Amino acid sequence: MGGKDINKSTEEKIKAAARTVLYKKGFAATRTRDIAEEAGMNLALINYYFRSKKKLFEIIMSETIAVFAGKLMQILNDQATSLEKKIELIAACYIDMFTEEPEMPTFIVSEIRNHPEAMLKRIPVKQAFSQSYFIKQFELAVAAGKVTEPNPFHFIMNLLGLIVFPFIGKPMLMASAGLNKTQFNQLMQERKKSIPIWIKAVIKAT
Image (cartoon, rainbow, N blue to C red):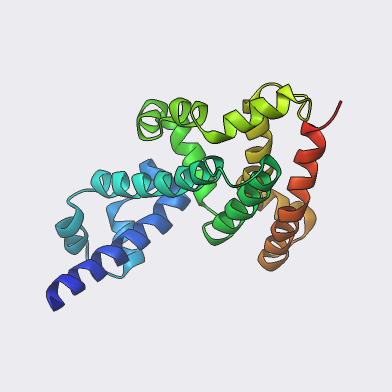
C-alpha cells in the first residue's frame, strides 16, 4: 500500500512539473529534461513513469481539456439556472481557474492552432454545445424577445473572449497599465462583476 502511495505521489509530482513547463513553453519547445528539472528528479525517473514526452503531453492535454470543457458544459447543462446566472457562473469559474493557472489559456489556444484535428477529437464541441440545455434556454429567450441576437455562438464567443483575452494578453496588459501580479489579479476579480453586466446589456440590446 505504501509503495502504491509513493508511486502515485511521484506521478502527481511529475505531472505537476510537466503542467508548469508545458503551459509556459508548449509541446515543441519543452524537453523532458526541463520537466525533470522542474520536478527535481532525474531524467530516468521521468522516463520510467511516463516513457516519453509525448505520452506525458497527452495526459496533461487530456486533463487540461477535461477541466476546461467540463466546467463549461456542467454550467451550460444546469437546468436549475437562468441564462443570466449562467453568465455569472462562467465568468466567476473561469476567472478563478485562470488566476490559479494563468498559462492555461495560452497553452490551449496554442495547441488548438498547432493541432486542430487532434483537439477536436478530444472535445466534441459541436455535439456538446448544440445539444446543451443552454441552447434550449437561448432559443426560448430569442423567441420571447428577451435576446435580440439569434446566434448563440456570438453569445459564447463574446463571453469567453472577455474572460480569456486578458489572460492571453497578460504580459502586455500588465506592462502597459503598470500593474504587478497582485493588481492584475484584483482587476480580474473585478471583471467577475463587470462581465455579466456587459454581456446582459449586449444580449438585451435592441
